[in-house]
Length: 171
Image 1 (cartoon, one colour):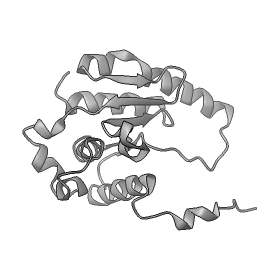
Image 2 (cartoon, rainbow, N blue to C red):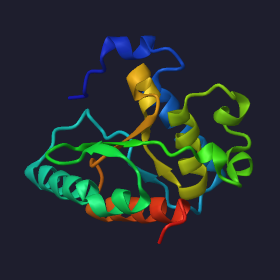
Image 3 (cartoon, helix red, strand yellow):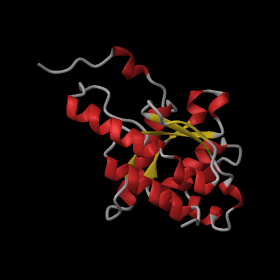
Image 4 (cartoon, rainbow, N blue to C red):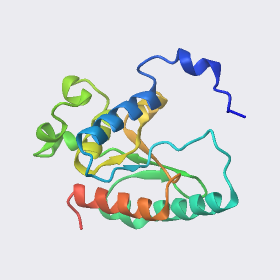
């Protein structure tokens, strides 16, 4: 028996948050086939979660919720404790010396008024091959945040935090 697709899915506008995240991630993946991209943005919500997965999500959430990585980087965040999501305040990467070079050719480069969360999304994707979810898609209160999810493996979560640390230059 095939799963039924919500009929509203076909009516989503092109700029729908998760469709845009998927489009940008797929483009990056096609352009960089030899780079392991880590998807920390959205999970597959069409499938039931078996106990082994819920335990893995708990472990990844605990790992992501560990304060040491984000605290060491001086990044404000909320969530991660008893929650599969962490919201981190996007650092102003537009001040990074390599910002223009890194995001060249991305939608953020073409739109100087893009919200910071989309700029950080593109920078993180291009520089660290990590995909999160721009907070701007959740309304104006989310514009300065990126949402990361624990719907990944503990190993991917650890690697994503290592890449974030390397990208922001704090070992």
